[in-house]
Image 1 (cartoon, protein in one colour):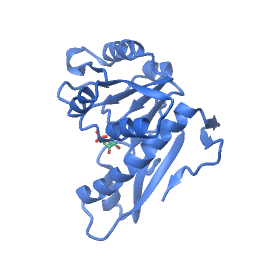
Image 2 (cartoon, helix red, strand yellow):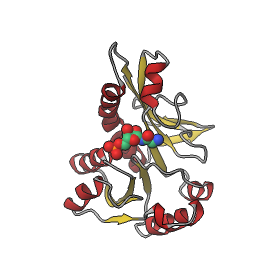
Image 3 (cartoon, protein in one colour):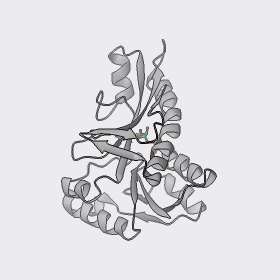
Length: 208
Ligand code: GAR
């Protein structure tokens, strides 16, 4: 039975999707904990209602990134994670933290990486006149919103879209591809070579 630890900063809808999929698909895994850097993160309530262990490491209580990351790592290690899931976790992690969890830490980003790293991805996609947008689940490396791509979902950018409508369309796909990627990690069916991740069983890594 593998331990999944999920880091959130806010709403936690991707965390919810992973919790549901783990239970309904009978993964050989359990959600060992949901950890937030913000005490007011709405997703903590959902986790508590489900009887999932929660923890808060409030970044505001620490003098800098290194000390915050050290405490975050200590708390996470207490739950013995096999898979560490960043689900709307809005803190940049130090290289030491990333190294510690390398190969077992994943992130979802609301764009078709390597396009639109960083913030305001949907607004930037619309302003750039993109006809397609999407989301990416990737292994976390030290460079922000980079790292080997596990799965991507593509959605159309429709005439009249604004940031909110496009974000909603993309988010609904995140809820499909993120649980899928985490299940693959639990199953150990991914291979990474030269920065490219392949599913050894040939499952599609594109949702379009
Ligand atoms: C998601 O859209 C996720 O892709 C994004 O934050 C949202 C969190 O929603 N993450 C990033 O922008 C990370 N760079 P959620 O809390 O409801 O899962």
